Length: 206
Image 1 (cartoon, rainbow, N blue to C red):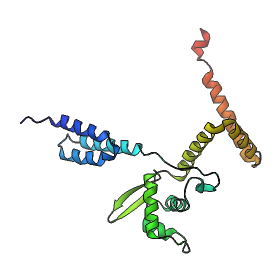
Image 2 (spheres, one colour):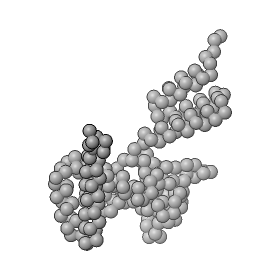
Image 3 (cartoon, one colour):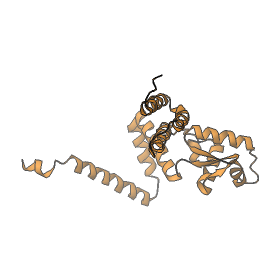
């Protein structure tokens, strides 16, 4: 009976797995059963896992009538994120222990929400013994950057002119230091655009 060469067999199994990102683990299991050159299996497995993680985009809904992080996160989600940003990778028990004593939150509620946050691209988890450890995918500053950009993109698509008018009006009520910062930021962006539009020196001479 004719047997396919190992490299072809691996190629077929690999491409099958790429049709469905959720089958990466199955693909990795198949790779482990096929003898590959030293280091090749690790590279392919790393690529597959990286590709699957890249397909998971951060998901959230913006609520303009809330405040702070509650604009994009639920109350318990916000509490969990604040704990994880402060103390790093933690188990559900660690998260519960970090909550104030008067906060009546059940163990199962935290498990449900942390798993939901993992699916939304907010957290990553790994198993340690019998427990799972959770960690934010983004630090606080990076998370704020991503959310701010998505919100601005959304508002701009709705009404850019109206958004800018309200933003300028809002800025007029802030302190002078913030006004000065944004004025310099706008000017630097304007200068950068002018430089990019200027033709190269060799083009000018011609």
